[in-house]
Length: 335
Image 1 (tube, rainbow, N blue to C red):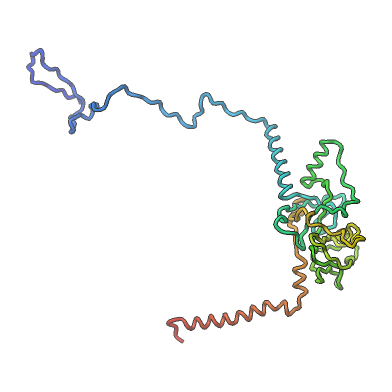
Image 2 (cartoon, one colour):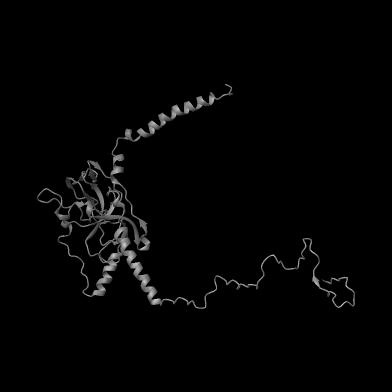
């Protein structure tokens, strides 16, 4: 409320002080609460503009132009092609199986749709091929010198599509690549066959459950004399043992100089076949059963096969006896 302040001057005094209104009541600190603070310099009130929202677009900022659909599709296709080339050049590649030499592990036949397999190119950068591995390799000269490579179209566009199809495993490759199973490595001896018609490596019969015998053909392997595999090479054979021209026959077998034309240099190995990727009904992993490891166990005498179990049993008896003695010697136990 407004509180007038009266002075003691008479009513008719012309010089009397006028009533001065004051706002609010007296302040306990000598200044009314509603009086301005004169200790600070006064000046015109500065009013700042209200803050603008951070997400409010500027009046002068233009929205980015949307790329045409055809350009986005072209960029996406180009990136996919580049990544495909890099992955298949350094990591893995899809190969088509053109023949039945690896039946029934890998399906293939002339004029039909064979399996497409993913080949791991990294594994042999850290270790060499081992017995039982299914490998894809570039055919050595004795394997390919008389072969005719698939013909490509004279049309540039069609030839480019054929090359792209070969890259992703949808068309025959330009080079002659083969897929076989490693049977023996450099330094080992290999021969066929023993009385049970089994291949021998270092004189021991192999355990080969993957061998396929075609109907109507004898379930026997063609014999060949003992061969010492040169260092840095592999002896490879197909799982379809009676329908595979491999290290036994490629290049005519042994040449006149006593060397081996059928072996495959390790440097020619492209990678290890890992998975069947097409068709969907054939999706599965490709086994790498080691025929030499199982054969070593099978070839051991029966008493040697039971030796580990006997040692384990004998070692368990003292441990059991010692454990029982320790329980009896516990402090506070009564016997």
